[in-house]
Length: 194
Picture 1 (cartoon, rainbow, N blue to C red):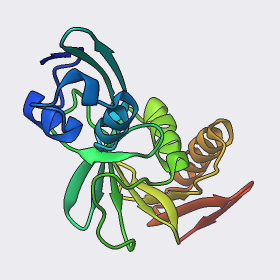
Picture 2: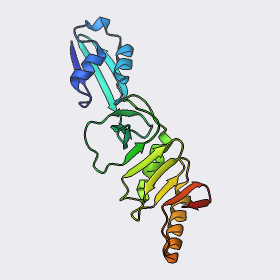
Picture 3: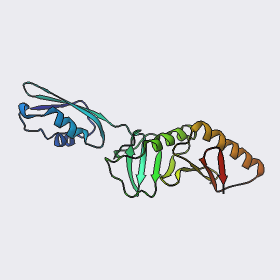
Picture 4: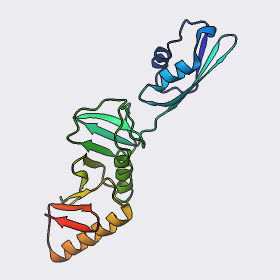
């Protein structure tokens, strides 16, 4: 039997092991079962299997695309836009790191709230120098400004409201010569300063 791979990234050996078909006769290969087994790998988004006589099995794998690095209890994973966690296999060109606090250890194959990933990526779009964001279910998303102030926003925040509110507050604080430690924007139109 010959196994042909359409993707090279989950390792060939890992795919063969997950497929569980090496050494089987083509008549005994259950394409649906094999696709399901391979798709169970955390880094695989979907898998398709086609058996062809006399002795070929075509395995097409679509890998998850890492959007951010998700750190939990000191362990880093890649997370895609849907919040699926999978093994980190290298570095991203311009990494965005979400450091989760208070959730306990995570493992590859679990999912996290996709809204957190999307919100952080939106924030990163207008804060290009910001690479590290905090997250906790209790406090929402946080990041530290160059002046040291920590900003809190909710997971459901509207980017088009947060940015002008933050810029307005920074302008007002600078005009007053005032420095704060915390800018809390989690409550809609109200900002709380400490």
